[in-house]
Structures are given as structure tokens and as C-alpha cells.
Length: 370
Ligand SMILES: Cc1ncc(COP(=O)(O)O)c(C=O)c1O
Image 1 (tube, rainbow, N blue to C red):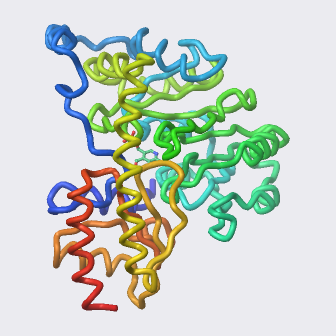
Image 2 (cartoon, rainbow, N blue to C red; image 1 turned 120 degrees about the vertical axis):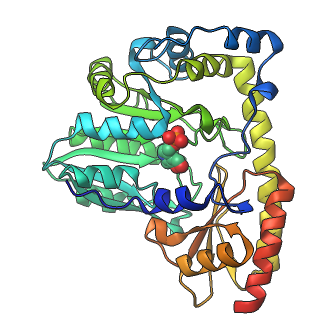
């Protein structure tokens, strides 16, 4: 089997924990468990017996997840090891070699790589900058054939931070329904909207809609490696059979913490703290871009802790990222990881001083090359 390199993750995995300023992170400054839990909850946590736990996710957690999706109950939910496992299982269990997957781009290219390694044809439809990173729905419509078995989107989007309008969501669902194809939405940035207005889920828009989410981004808890799939019961049952092979179960400790985090009051607290960080940092980044307005421009993200900057310099994005990393120990994601040279993705979820210190060092490199 030929597995193409997952450019983004291969690059990040090598350097993200060794640089001084990691601005590739697309999530938010992570919580410690001490910040999150009461003494009593911590006491309970350390007294848990480390068995396997319920393989498709603890009842408490699946109930808490299902409450986030109108019309769902715990049998509509499969708990996974991060959203990454959810994405893997979705492609693996729902598509066959020779099928066509139509994928929104730019995107986190995990599903692209998995599908291609399994002999699934991947066709791309684009978010267009001239549409404020809105979808080219005409392009999507024209790509659909009788072999199209899934349309997959990332909403809110990585790397642009764009959010689909309700009309666009309905149109995508209508097109999927007309093609009798699965509609799959990676919604891992849901809950990290800068204006506090939570993005609608694709779940329930159509009876073949499956969505994923997790605690890595909006909830600032990537270390728990906790995600989930929500979809029609039959499909979720089949995905669970896939999960028997990929992982058996997710971590018992993570299930326990996640169920606490998703209790309505705690969830709101967590999302509010995270939103504050991103809103403040976006303002700081905007000031920095204004200072460099001959070199950079961007459409501000509506959700997520990332900004996708277009630049006006004659240097390739990977070269620029490498130079900054090697000379200043500041790490930013090159647009090349999304097939888009002359763009950079900058994480805005860190502590503000950390972001500003990284940008100051970027200034030194810019002074030299521009
Ligand atoms: C769109 C998208 N989906 C999935 C993932 C993987 O997330 P997790 O850490 O929950 O596995 C990422 C990580 O950056 C992402 O950006």
C-alpha cells in the first residue's frame, strides 16, 4: 500500500516540541487538569480503576456528547482517540476502493491521504478567497458523478477559519442527498467561534450526515486524545466495528475528564476562557499585519485559533518557515502544507506574550528578506 506523506503532521511532529516559539498550533493554550477540575473531581480521577472502560465510549460521555446534537442519543455516538481516529474510521468504514470522495479544500489533508492510500479517488472543491473563503458550490455540483459516495467538509475550516453560511450548508446537504452520498463534516473547531455564536452542526441536516468533533481545539485539551463521531445509528455501529481494529477503546481517564468538561456549565466556562484568548490574540495579530500591510493581508478567521495570511514576498512558504525556525526558533506553518504557497498559517491560541515574542522575532527575519 502506498501511503503519501501527511505533509502538515510530518512537519509539525518533528519540530513543534523543540522550538522556542511554536506558532503552528491550531488549538488554544491547553488546560492543566488542576485548572479544570475541583479537588474532589481530581480525587475521584486518581481512584479510578484502570480497566478498559466501555469500548465505544462511557455512557456518561456519550450522553454528554449526544446532548450537543439535536435529535441524537447515546447510540448515535462513537468515542474515538482524537478526531484523527474519527476521520480515519469514517473513510475506512464508509468508502470502498473505486469510490469517489469530494473534499473541500483548503483542508486538514488527513482524509485526502487516507482515502488515496485505499484506492479511493479524491476530487477537490474549493473555498475561494474572493468569496471571503466561501465555497464554490458550482464547482462542487459539477464534480458529482454516480461514483461519488461521500462529500466531506471541514467546518469551521482549517486553515482559513471560515464558517459556512446556513444557506451553503443546506445546499451542500441537498447535493449530497441528490447523489445519495454520505455527507461528512469535520467539526473539530466548532465552539471556537470568535463572536461566540456556535456554528450549526451538519448532523441532522440529512439522514446520511456524519460529523466528528473532539476536545483538541475549542476545548484546549488535545492531550486527552479524545474525539467522537455522531451519525445514524447503523453507520455508527459499523464504525464501532472498525474501532475494534484501530484502538479497541479510548482512554478511560480521558472519557472520565471529557464527561466532566462537557457538562453544560463547565463547557461554557471552558469555551469562554478559550474565546477570550483567541479574541485578544487576533487583535494583536491584526495590529502586526497592519504594521506590515505591504507584505501581508488576510481575511480574519471567524472561528478556530488560526489565521491564514497571504504574503507578498518572493520566497517559498516552506523556505520562509524553515528560515524562521532555524534562525529564530519560531515555527509557523507554510502554506505548502495545504498546497497553497505564498500563504502562512499562524496559530493565535497561545498566551499573548508568547505570540508577540514570536512575531517580534519574525520581524527580524522580515527586515532581512523584504
Ligand atoms: C480539521 C482537523 N481535524 C482533525 C484534527 C486532528 O485532531 P485531534 O487532535 O482531535 O486528533 C485536526 C488537527 O489539527 C484538524 O485540524
